[in-house]
Image 1 (cartoon, rainbow, N blue to C red):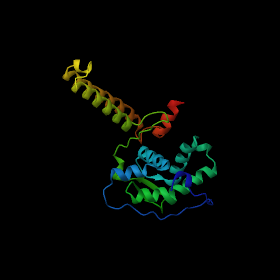
Image 2: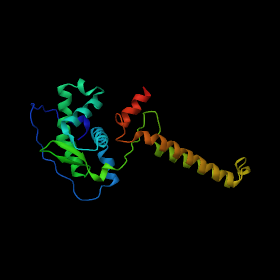
Image 3: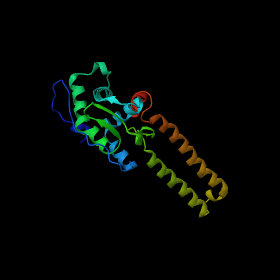
Image 4: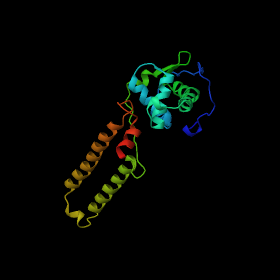
Amino acid sequence: MTDADEPSMDLEDGPYEVAAEQATDRPLSGADVFDLLASRRRRYTLHYLKQRREPVDVRELAEQVAAWENGVEVADLTSKERKRVYIALYQSHLPTMAKEGIVEYDADRGVVELTSALRDVDVYMEVVPKDDVPWNVYYLGLATADALLLLLAWLAVYPFSAVPDLVWAVFVLVTFGLSAFVQTYFNRRMRLGDEGPPPELKRRTAED
């Protein structure tokens, strides 16, 4: 279920119940984590749970996720906005995350918290604006450019052949080293669970 396909059913005020299938004992793989993070609401959920690092009431979680989603303060949320996110969390996202070992979800108490498998794991998001190039594409282009330069030097094409081999080796190391340094710097600003709103909202605010 995508964020756009969240249930539209309404609920009356009162206790909500949902049966959450708890996590299996299998190890949590990187593929599992990245698949779960494909959903914006699950990213926001993980971000808030990593900030709190303790059991959180599902209503409180839903309110904060809804506030980030709608770009408002929690106090300014409408009843419809709160319920829409609450329903999506308890019907779909939290049971899925519990099944995959991301969270421990107690539906009877209405609380959720991160499992030990993810509580102390740093998760970084690559937030790529529309006009930017993803890091994997950047590194592919850099490797292609460096390989072309080395090939021209090896074929003794002037002026590339006039540059000593050691200089070319240093040039390749420096380009990749600087790129890795810049990527590390920006990625550490995109860590889920850091103070403030989710990384993608921080990036959007900085661009505005």
